[in-house]
Image (cartoon, rainbow, N blue to C red; front, side):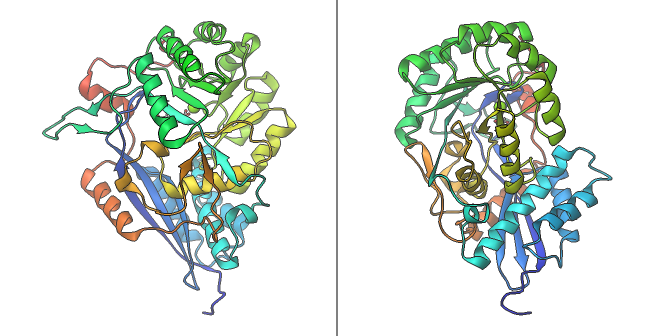
Length: 418
Ligand SMILES: O=C([O-])C(=O)C[C@H](O)[C@@H](O)C(=O)[O-]
Ligand SMILES: [Mg+2]
C-alpha cells in the first residue's frame, strides 16, 4: 500500500431514514420517513468518496452486489467500474433504468474520490463549470398540516402548515421565496381536480409576475384533460410536466399544446430517447443523474438533447446533501441547462443534515462547491443517527398509496384520474 494507491478497497453502504412532511402527489402522500442509501467508497490509500441514492431493499441489495465486483479496480477507471456493475446486475435487473441507479451511485463516489486525490472539484473533472452557481426552483406541494396520529404514534407537525388550495400554495411559495430567494416555482399537481390546480397556477402567476412556473401532475390526466389544462394555462406556465401517461399520450397532447411538454416519467432510459424524438412526444427532459447512470452520462444525455432540440431541466426526489452536491456539480457544467433545477432540499429538517457546510440555497441558487471532490464532508454522527432511524422504523420501501390508505381506506391509485 502506498499514498497514491487509488484501487478500491471497499464500498460501505449505509441505509438511512430521514423526516419527510406529508406532501401530496398523484399516487398518495409522503410517509413520515424517506429512505436513502449513503455510499462510502474506500480506496487502498484511505481516501473515501461519497454517494447517495434513494433507498429500499432492492437497491440496497444491488449496491451490496456492486460493491463486491469493484474491489481492486482503479477508481479512475469509471467506465470499467460501471461496466462491471452493469454486467453483474444484468441477469437479475434487465431494465437499464434500474441498473442506472446503481452505476450512478458508485460513479459519483468514484468522482468524489478522484477529486479528493487530485485536489479538484468534481465539476472540473466533468470538463469545467459554465456557471458558478446553479439555479433551483421552489418545489411547491399540496400538503397536510401534519402527519396524523397513527397506531399510537402521535401526530407529526412541521413548520410549513397546511396547503390545500390556491391561497395555501401562494403562501407556501412566499415562504419559499423569502427563505431561499427562489425565482421560479414548480407545483406538484395531480392531487385535486384540474380546475383547482389551474386556479392555483393562475394565483401564483398573479402573485409572482414574470416568474417561470411549472405544473407536474405525474400523469394524472387523460389526453383530453391535458389539452384542456394546456389551453387554460397558455402564457402561465413555461412547461407542463408529465400531464398524461405514455409516450404516445404525450405525443397526442404535444400536437396541440401551446407550451412545451416535459418529462421525468416517460423518458427515463436511453432506449426511450429515439421513440420520444420520432414522435415529438417531449420538448423538455428533466434529467436525473441518479437514474441516468451518473454525472458523465448526464452530460452525454445533455448532448443528445441539444442535438434534437430538446430543452433541459433537472428532476429531484426527496434527497440529502450528497445528492444536492452532485446535482449542483453536474448542472454547473451543462451549457444547455435551460431551466432551473428541481430540489426537495427545503423540505428537509435541520436535524437531517448529513453534510454540514458549503451547500446553501440562497437567491434561488446553490454555489458550486470548490473544494476537492463534491466539496462536502460527511457528519458520521448524523449518519449513524439516521441509520438508527432506518433500523428502528422497519420501513423498507416507499409506498405513498399505502400510506394514504391508512387515513382514507377508499383511496385508489388511478392514473390517469381525471
Ligand atoms: O418531478 C417528479 O415527477 C417528482 O419529483 C417525483 C417525486 O416522486 C415527487 O412526485 C414526490 O416526491 O412526490
Ligand atoms: Mg416530474
